[in-house]
Length: 503
Image: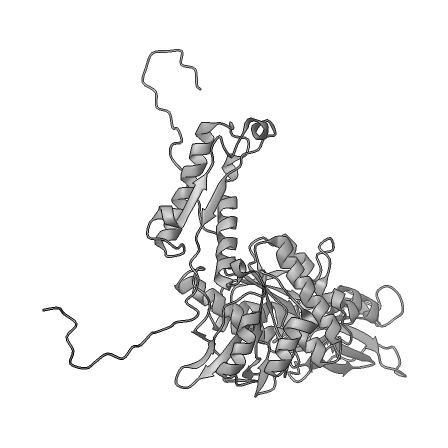
């Protein structure tokens, strides 16, 4: 309290009432896979497709990552993080387009890196030796790199300098050619859309990574706002024979473990390609055996247009599903199950499911994507992979993630406050005010707030021994809304012409 030493009128600002809790974001995806260019193992934020192409290149043959990110934005996604993997074992089958300039072979480091050209110019400075020259690297006609080099052996040799300093090209001597200064000329290294940036070799650890080294999706532990994780190129690796089906299960189990460890995000898993309904049932229950409230599985693959091949191809559905989640969150809220929603960009399904076939898959937590006449291709399932009935529905798990994270972030002011009845009352008011707002949005079940939730923080939850340990314990119970998964109309025949009103 301030000390007053002279007579007068004083104004003090004091805190009163509950502090507001602001809801956290619920739809920030993370995608892990192969890209045409960009940094490896660095979670990079992109907010639209243009930002993605600027940082990671365009669509690339054999890569599902760009198609997944594009499908995410197309279906309503906004922010997402992209992690490029595969750099530890040689970046690409062929690094990029090449050209010959004098006795040197020039090669672009990245695929899809734009229209690169290299020009030989005069060396900088006056009276430069005959072996000296400059190498100008241009992107779409604009000089982006300049290297002062020499054709002689030594630390200024063109091969040594460029391969060390350039981020765009590499240089090697043509076998049998004399090492001499090339004539003034300019050659183009244009992108080749048909080439593939799929690594020569990849193992499960490339995806899993390590949080200490910030590699793979282990590096995503440092990004708090992520709420869903997709690894679409895991299936690309399997199709190219880079990893086995056992490795696929290993990586997917690691994704689930990552989400369970973080406690605030969901894994969106893809099934192996071309599985029948019976095979996907066996995959889920026997081969993979996943059982987690932090994971979902969508089936079957969807067909979309791939600009890299100018054709429609089947792709894993996880990227498009993440976009559907984001769209539902924006239009209805995280409490609404992201189902009975159209899949934008999908033109066909790898397997046309029947109602009877879905009756085999829905009870075991496989979310089906189905095509309906006149209604298009729709998500027709909203379950987690958990066998626990309390966490059966995806929207319930995501609602709890949202509420827990919001309350956690919105009550940081409590730490080191005097642990007494006044503090407990402020905590109750703060959390109750937040939950009332969520109830009014339709996120909680009940005709009144008392039916929808309770907040208990008093002497009963905070005995003397707990206070001595510096603890404040607050119990919160909520009744989440659950989706109307089975809508049943009971129709009865009544006698025609009979009045039901007693006269």
